[in-house]
Image (tube, rainbow, N blue to C red):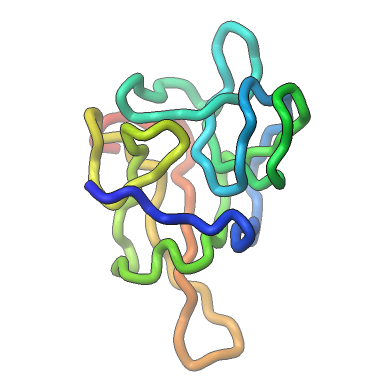
Length: 142
């Protein structure tokens, strides 16, 4: 399992089918995998070692913030992650990593699929690779 290397300055939502805004429990960076804490309701870093059995997870698209500031996570839609997906095939699954806030090209402790690599055509001769988030709870083998 290799964690994706995401340049926060190149993270941008392409289309957001569903998003959520709330206070952050920790300092967050764009492109990190986050989940809404079931007890506090605040948005915190997510990781595969503890699972994500709720539907309140997503990719942070807000610029770096302080603890308690409002952040927005994309829960369903497509998010550009710069060159982080450049070496992966179209259709490749992206997983929650055991590293808090990270995503990986293979399963961590639990097989928690975040989304898959999708082609988006711009003005050039080759497509860009973006992350299409799966809708609904992240469940093993979904």
